[in-house]
Length: 507
Image 1 (tube, rainbow, N blue to C red):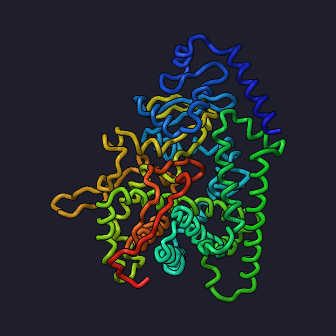
Image 2 (cartoon, helix red, strand yellow):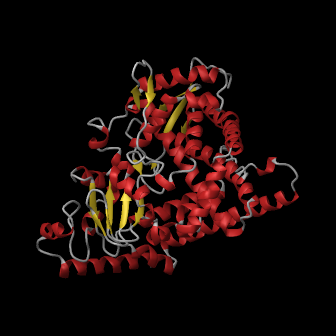
């Protein structure tokens, strides 16, 4: 059935091309926009899009580099016009200045709506505003930060270090990306749900919730790469192929999370102490939220927290294997802190480690692109005219590779670019960088509420791991960056683990 559907759609496209393709594509392209791929009547840029479908990141980046405004137009058959921009002034306008004219929009929420439902990352308007207010309040509390740090510390010291130590002792090959994803899932489930999936026990089968999340996230993301938008919708109606697998995976996610929510609610009703009320789910339930609303909220937080930090750390660990001098500087920074026991306040002093994380995310952002939709006709600061309903995409991956933003060495890993010298000082300090130039945590009203908690987690893991172990990649080839809902390294990061000769603490 899926093959027949694809054949019918392909035949339809061929008919359109035969009867409607203009003999002067260059001229027609100019009628739409000066910058962007060739565009034709009715089918738009579908030919170029399909040709570059497996390298969209590189293709968009190439097109943006030759656009004087770093903005391009990509019209597709059956889709709204797509404007892709790497221009910080445009991004500030979209995410802050005229924020209310650029909601996520139905096109975007349709893609993720089956999985995320009415969760904070998939809604606009009052629903978003109320959830945002609740989340911002909770993430700003000292009690949640302390609880999250204790969860992080326990997971690192009692599980992550044990897994790496065992691999070092036996000499086995580990997929470090998989280990970090398991670690991150444990942490985010403990903090969000007060539930421990114990994913770092490698002797156990993969938790069904983890498998379902992976499947649902991948298929939901691939909906956006269909050359013809209607394809996935037709497959969903017919319940065939990937859409059938997605439906089954989402059912598993919803059922398992709902069970956890009900169990938590029951435990709170019979509980007596405050200890059971530290996680986000307990806080949401205590605030009077219930049912699908709570389920969708915690699913959104799990989705946001489980792969973003693990992706950033995976790429940093690989980059450090290619840059020994940078690794030595991190060790010089963290060794004195780890020797006394890495504490919450110590993390604030790890500025060089933070610069390395920012540099890794500049080159390999966990979220490669994000889209909004124009609620009304508008004009971006660079003069690009928008029509109501246009999809407007800002593009962190391409921005990190723009010479106009980062210099001629934009594709090189150089953490020192994040430092500056204050007058009269010999010590470099982290310089402020506009979030609209570096929008990996978004910016404006929708800036990531968990940004500081993410840095806390990543600094602690990087410091704890590097001070104890050397990471040695098994494969010397350059890893492939795969952009889905959260970007990852194709095939994982296979490594050998070696103990450092100057272990500061007993493991």
